[in-house]
Image 1: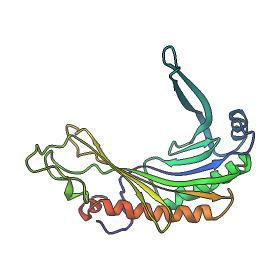
Image 2 (image 1 turned 30 degrees about the vertical axis):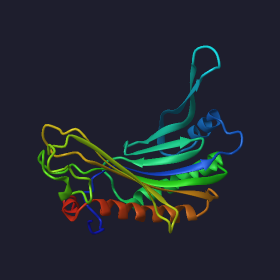
Image 3 (image 1 turned 180 degrees about the horizontal axis):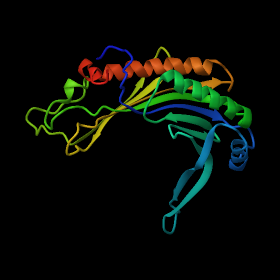
Image 4 (image 1 turned 60 degrees about the horizontal axis):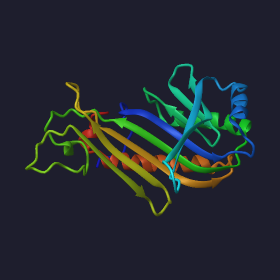
Length: 248
């Protein structure tokens, strides 16, 4: 594992804060759209967010039947510089920071500002889930056939007798921290080797916890800070010191 510290050139391709909430009674997409469009959030509406459902039935007699439906459940908004993307949904809110990533403090402050607007305009009843997720592209300086263990701690390795050039892999863990009740989904993936320019291994760390909070409860932000600390432990526990040094 690597020592935890600030990495000036962290390999973050997307960092997000997600808050899921129980909507107020009677809230519709049209109501959400009117409320958000009337708000001076300093973001512009990019388009609607749709959610699809699929049903399959097998009647006692006759052929199987299927039906698909799609409903609009929120709006996608972008900041003027295209560095932030916000999703305002009937059942929650997500803020994503795209490259170049700045600091956790900036992301958190922007999330607080927009969440305040969301609560004022849409009046959700309760916060039921809190999460922070960081997607990293490690882009490792490896040649085909070299061991990933140099940069990734405890990644399942290739047997000595097998071919040594790894073209793709996928490793995913869902982890539970008993002391806090939080969970982490930790994913490592490689989807092909480019002709040149490093090996693009994705390290995705999603830390989350169920909740039962009032929307304006300050415990929301305290919980996010704890999840961020858990995310950091998971990230630095996954990479080696050699990997961390790549991003200093």
